[in-house]
Every structure is written in C-alpha cells, then in structure tokens.
Image 1 (cartoon, rainbow, N blue to C red):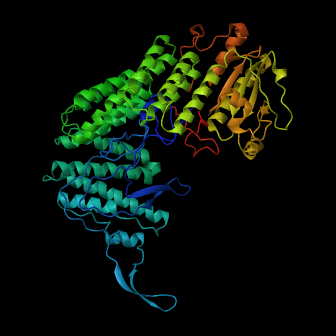
Image 2: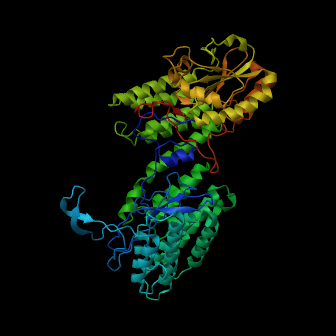
Image 3: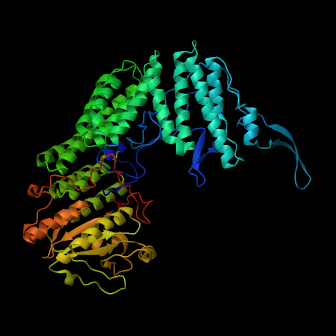
Length: 636
C-alpha cells in the first residue's frame, strides 16, 4: 500500500484509513494521561521494571488511569482504546469518584514540604533560602514508610484513598531493577487486594465499587507489563474477574464488566474469529441502547464500527453508527451529545470507503456513486479551512490507479483541482497542481512506449534496447523505503521463477544520498541491474525517469511488454505473477488487466485492503523532505 501526504496540515481520519487498510504517520490518536509508572524492558530474562514517573497526589481519589494497551475508552475524548481494534492507541477508564477523604501526600512525593536552611557554597559563602533536599529513599525505605507489607482495613473511602496514594507514589529512582520490580509488584497486588475489600464492603456506594473495579483493571494491566512472562495468566485472571462481576447487583459495576468483556470479544473478532461476528453486532446494539449509556459506551460502540470497517464490512459499520446517532440524539450529556453530532461526518466517510472498496473489487456501477459521495462529503466542508478532504481524495486517487481504474483516478484528480486549486494558501495550490500533474502522467502511461535512461552503478550508460522483446518490470525504489525492500523479496521469487521465460527486472534507485545507496549494496545484492540518474543534480524524485512517470510515492512499478509499451502500473504482491501468467499464456496482444473481469480480477490487489491481521504500512518521509509542508515524497 502506498501513502502520500500532500500537505502537513490535516489528514483523512485514522478510522477511515484503517478501514481502507491505509495508515498515515502522525495522523489520528489522542493524548492520554500516563500511569504512575511507565515500564521498560530490562535484562535477558524478558522481565520489565517500572520507571519513575513523578506524580502529585490529587485532592481526591480519582479513578485510575489504565495503561496504554488496555481496553475501554478515555472519558475525556472517547477515543478508541483497544490496540487490537483501534488505530489510535491507549486509553483510560471512566470518570473520577468524588466522595473521598482529603489526600495524604505519600512519602517522597512531589509537593511535600522542603526544609529551608542556610547553604554554604564552595567559596565559603552562606546562601540564605536554598532548599535542603532530603536524601533519596531506597526502595526498602519507601516500602517501609508506606507500609507495603500491611494492607489496612478501613471504610471504602479510606481504602480508595489508600489505592490512590499507592498508585501516586513516585517509584524510587535509586533502586536496582530487581528491587524496583518487586516494589511495583507489591504496589499493584496491594491495590488488587484493597479493591476486593471495597467490593466486599456492605456500605460501599455504587461509585466507590465502580472505582474499585477500575483500580483493579489498571493494576492487572500494569502487572502484565511488569511480568511479561506471566502476562497471559494475568490477562486470564482479569477476564475471570470481569466475568465474576458481570451479574453484580450493582448495575454500575456490571455495566463496566460487560463493556470490558465486549471489547475482549471485539478483539477476538478483529483477530479473525468470524464465529463471534453476530454476537458482536448484537452486543453492540445492546450497548448503544443502554438507557444509562455514557461516553464510554459511545467509544466502545465506535470501536466496533471501526473493526467492521477495517475488515471490509463498511455497511455494518455504517449501521452501527446510524444506531448510535439515533440512540444518542437528544442526550442530556453534553460530551456525549457533542460526539454524536460528529457521527454524520464519520458515516459519510465510511460510505465513501465502502464504495471505494466496491469499485476496487470490480463493481464499475459504483464509480459514479463514488464521485458523487465525495462531492456530498465536500459539501459539508469549507475547503479553505479543512484540508482533510484533500488527503482523502489523494488517497482514493492512488487507490484507483493501483486497481487500473485510470479514468476514475483522473476524475478524482480533477475534483482535487476543482476544490483546492484556488486555495488561499499558495503552498496548498502548488501541492495540488503538482499532485494532479503527476497523476495525469501516471494514468497516461498505459499503452505508451517506455524507456529507462541513466547509468548503471559503475557509471556506464544503461542500455534499454537489450530488453526489447521481453517482459520487464521497472521497479522504482530507495533504500530508505522499507516497503520497497519488502516488495523486492516477492519480485525476486517471481524473477527466479519466470526469467527463463523472458521476464526481466530493472531497478531505478531514487536515493538522494549516494552513500545510503552504497551502504545498501554493501550489505545486499540484487539479481538485476540498478539504474541511477546520470545527472548528479537530478537525483531522488528529480531523477528524469521518476519525473516523466510522475512518481511521488514508493514503491512504484511499471510492467512493460515485449513491444516496449506499458501494460500495467503497480502490479504489487501476487498480482505480478498473475499478470505474468496472463501475458505468457496469451501473448502481449491479449494482455488482460485488473479492469478486465475475464482475468478474474474482481479481487483487489494484495495489500490494498488488509485484514485485521495485516499491519497497514506506515508512511515514511523521503530523505530531506520530512519537514516540507508540501512534500509529495513518501512511502506508499
């Protein structure tokens, strides 16, 4: 999959890109508060140790922050949380409790009182008012001061305060990894035990019991990071805990458990288990229609829509979003109401994604529908203020090229020009003009004569004439492009299999730095020739071969027939061998491309719309262009 960014501002939403199997570096996501301790790997045993994260105790016990990688949704922004199903990363759990006793500052914690005394400088001068910092506590001293070996008994309010104080303690930064690990294990296992005491208390309020559940979930998550070798057992214990409270008499608690278990099932579905698809749909409806639904319910349901879209079921994603829109209309919750208003835009985008996928799968009747759907979405935007549609159209235009829908690609490029060609920012105008011109070059390559010019790696002029009468794949690549290197492995297999039948490969290297290219070839070899620009002032994406083809994203492939004309561009993955089989069986005059259904080309090119098990490639900026606001040179 290729990706480009036309401008530095704005991008198509991460959810939409995930649905199409696309990913743009730096798009989407949101900030979440870090846990009291972050984790780093240490040692050969695969264990981890928490790193100190200074934290000042709040004025009242708040619901714990769940570490990145756990389930549920941040109540502050409703962003999808589960990394197995959402494009944006970690999240936190529900809102804070408000019924706690005053906070006691933990030993050694930021905000504690400093003694002020007279300090003597090296020159023997007395300096008044300098703070005298206490020596740092060891892990053992800190554990003793907060009495880690004794979990107190107290009221639910006192126990919540205890859990809050424990998770707010800044871990000692002078401990060795083993001491620090043991300290952290003790902290979070104590929280688990304290949480059980709150849940067992007859006088605990609903909010207090819910907060205790959240503290326990947070502790389970932290322990999976601290003890990676036991992570699966800890996760199973967390699931068992959720199952044990799912029928709790307290609806606040049971609802939290149900949402957690739903996201576990959703992750299972995202990982490829189709047996739970109907259950996911049914439970999503139940979650949406919960009369006590809050922003967490919204985020979990939105997560479900993202998963269905990512798996190619945009119709089901739209159905879930429409249910959400209907159910959450008129809610008194201001945050929930604000999020609900955004659903119209998300629904329009998913409809575009679904239509795009139908076209890519060979449904030509949807081409006009796709263009009109884009126009309908554009009608809700102000192009002078919003560049998100520009990124979307750029993505779809390239997708249509990759599926040999050249006329449709040109129509979408023209729509880009129509919408943004008179933008008040000249940088945007320049970017659009270049992008549209390059799209015109690429889509006009088919059936035209093709020539590769330049020098080989030793500086000798490259002889293209010796490839007459052969099928040639011209591979534009660069050493900084990981997807290019990955694609090469597949090309090598096809090359070895079909070279004896007249198939050749020519690489065109677009490295801007000759040293990077040299380093690549010191460690690697290619079984075919590599061509570089003969002009040292026209290298990288300014290489004459790249310029005439409109190359602005890598890898870029051109398949040339024996008559020297272009048969197809970007035959990626399995499509390359499929194309070769077609031309070898029928001859160059009978070549059938993806747009010809007789080839069985109703299937999209491999890699265009990956399943949840396939990672969408990340955009990689070309050397020297990462900071350019109008950069067109990124990995696709």
